[in-house]
Length: 476
Ligand SMILES: NC(=O)c1ccc[n+]([C@@H]2O[C@H](COP(=O)([O-])OP(=O)(O)OC[C@H]3O[C@@H](n4cnc5c(N)ncnc54)[C@H](O)[C@@H]3O)[C@@H](O)[C@H]2O)c1
Image 1 (cartoon, helix red, strand yellow):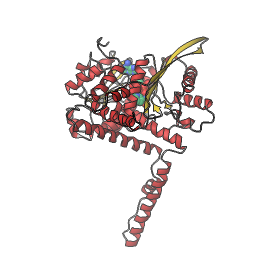
Image 2 (tube, protein in one colour):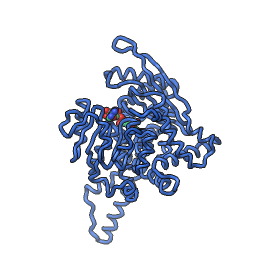
Image 3 (cartoon, helix red, strand yellow):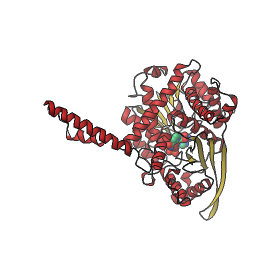
Image 4 (cartoon, helix red, strand yellow):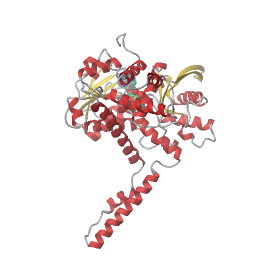
């Protein structure tokens, strides 16, 4: 598939890191300390299934402990290996630093095809994997807090938190050992949609800057922009739906495992998602033209390309044929370092993974804080907001009565105004604020320094600088 010289995923991340530190003024020893992965634990465990013992291999990699706990998802896929979890753990370090989530970077994975097992079997496997990690403090509210990633979701997180609680019956913070849980296990509103929502907010922020949009050779806002999405899982489906339903973008192409679907007028994402869920793929979906060699659709003529499935899908072999002028990396590492160089040369604007998909870890942070505070997220803020709004309404009504102005507030407006924000509104506004602030810090570095030609390099510089300062303040 890839030319032989293609770097591995971890090598790609390291090459991107090297490009950034080359224009930074950091001691070489510190650069090396930040770059290396601190540890990777490999476990092989057996589970009796269908009358025989099956052996599974799993990993938990800790890239940087400059802040603890370390944070990063657990992936279930057949391609999981040490190189992949180490690359993903490194990306978590830089991502958390970029959005100022106070965590180090980690990632885990289990070599498994989750579609090959029944729910009760997956539960047995997950609990056993979690047991192996918990007993080594590789899942712990204070030290290492996983979350969902490819192939896992709320269900797996609920099993993990339950397993942890059984093994730590007196830990009052047990619920904070993992994020991305269902609401009834201590989750937070808006976590399932968070990464896709973050992709939407990232694009909205990009399109708020006409000069940035012009650099991609585009104009105007998101309305009517033709979008191709690869992967209609958690991240891709939410991003595509929000962009189509709330911003007027046209999802013209959807690439899945078994092929791709195209419709010039825009596809109904919810319909296609349901089709994929029921049939396992996009083939025979009546809404669009089907192409068996789906990956070729990444090269289609469109305005925005959103790879939201796997790493390395755009490589030296196809980068030259990519026509989208704007790529937003909803997946982790969808471009190899070689592809990145080819596309930069062509002038393609790339909104990098460590920023683009940071919505998940941002809302995970809110969930972790909620669990540790043992109070509904934003409850205190809501009480304060309600009190302040009550004062405003009273003042307005008093002024109107005193001066005979006859101002009245409709009961409906007054009710909504007095109510304050609920948890979902607070989560979304906190996420929006985070995505805007992080874009500003990347952008200042991108446009403010002649030696920083692209957003990825800027993102790495901002992140590495913060990690370096954290190590330096500890005396390293
Ligand atoms: N879930 C999160 O909160 C989160 C957060 C940050 C980053 N990410 C990253 O986003 C990416 C997707 O994660 P997810 O949670 O949406 O996973 P998911 O398992 O929910 O969905 C993945 C989707 O990609 C599709 N897919 C798999 N192989 C494909 C192929 N070869 N071609 C086309 N489609 C293919 C699958 O069928 C599925 O629909 C990963 O890179 C992950 O690391 C996820």
